[in-house]
Image (cartoon, rainbow, N blue to C red; front, side, top):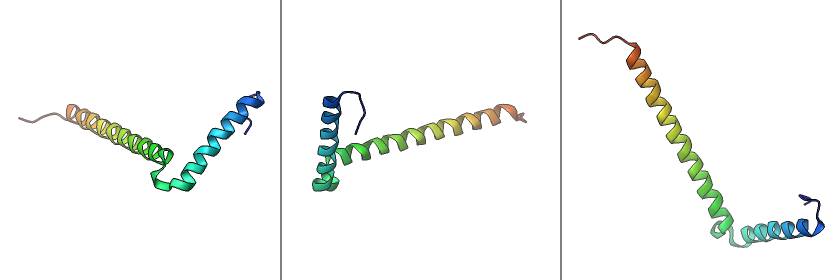
Length: 71
């Protein structure tokens, strides 16, 4: 893992990455890393859903404004 130019910094980062992987290996679904990933994925899906709903509402309003209303 050579992220930076410093050997010491690379070693620290490698240790944290290895600790995280071991945590996932031993704890599985109860690991904090897995929980954070799932929460992030849920937030991302929720954000996509909200954006899709907003876009749909905007397009419906646009269509309504373009069609003449016969009263």
